[in-house]
Length: 225
Length: 242
Image 1 (cartoon, rainbow over the protein chains, first blue to last red):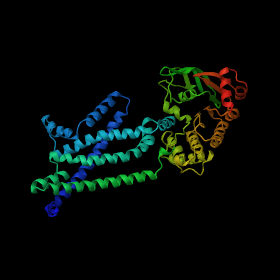
Image 2: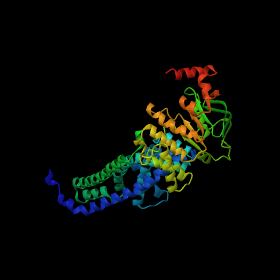
Image 3: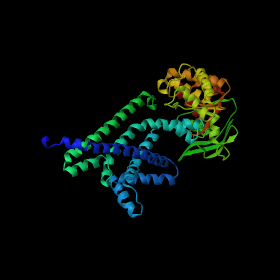
Image 4: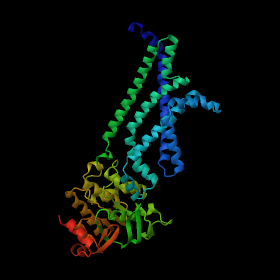
């Protein structure tokens, strides 16, 4: 079986995979930054008492979480031009990932904030802090610790989701595999290499998550009493 | 200093404060006791606006609560509140806990706040714990940090909501000692507690509440030795029996 497997071709295509690896990495980083921005905004809206801010955020989060990312991506890629908005595919890809992942990030951050006990908020209120002071000095620093591990989990999901961008011909890892598969009729070589690259990205993020958890464990948290 | 006049409050259908009228003079120490669910905590939580009242007048330090002109955040800087569950900031050291509000709310320069904070922690007997996190402190130590945190704001009034009821018995006295010290310095205090030793030592008056209403008030000696109402007698017989 393995005599048909061409390592030589893979070596030939390595520059293409290197390019795809770099593309997936940086577009994931940009998308995740976008997701954080979208998520923080949505979460801030969701936590307000005003229904005018809360309801749109809730609807947005529901719509995103209820529909497949592929459908969202196709809507932006095929749908928007029909509505007169033409954007480069790379931009559309990053936009789709940011908007999609942002909904999940919003819920992760919200869970983190809600996990902070009411007593902490009251201690802030009782000492005369304003809403923003309480958030900045008391709630968010504590919520931040709770949020980092699930956020890194979401980052891992985002990296894998970015494979869908190959369908709108963004040059990234999966696209590199597709090219090798179709140019040389070598899908095994192509997609195994693609998979190996994702695995490398995954382990990178996992190491980051593990070290962040170790770092958080070294610092005292509120869970002890 | 604190004036309740005809104050009422409901939680849904539950009438938690019934026509409360009570005056607390400057430098007076008032102990509030009563069975659980009698509205004692709600009563003192209204004073710094952690709960809002439905009707009646509540005037604190000359400002009427619920008035547009009353700035609650400003008023709260004058009113310290000690919680049953301490509510220290777990991500901050003892010293950071006590200087946080002075720096950000009182706008005191950090260096100055730190000096005052160290002094205050030393005063409550925690000179060796400046850099400890709450999780590294015992309950009694945490509650003393919480009291120091309030005192660092130089409040005019201190409210204590069952400050010793979450503590192991051997830690209660270290917290009460600190509270006695605060009382003896002339702080206006309202303390929800069943610690009768404390009440006898420093309280000018004991207020007994039941089912949302003030049933009886009087000097501690008189209240504990010669309660006037059936309800207070029943309550005292229960807590004194053991």
